[in-house]
Length: 73
Image 1: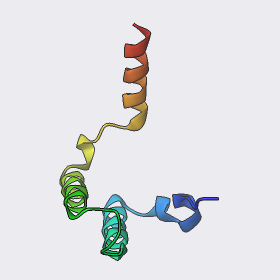
Image 2: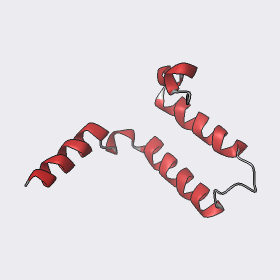
Image 3: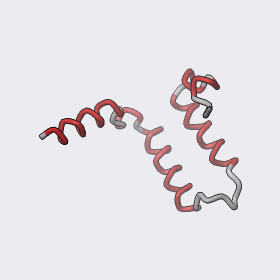
């Protein structure tokens, strides 16, 4: 079974600490992995953008509801 955020207590961290942990995890990925340098840069860009303005993110529930509503039309 795949571990969850709750298993490790990550769900109790602040957003800033979650972002720092994500950076730490990405930094631990071996250089010869399948993740390209460009993709790592894009992840960093998105994390920095979210850290600068966390309230700009749209919750999944709103995205899902809007998508389902569009599909029903």
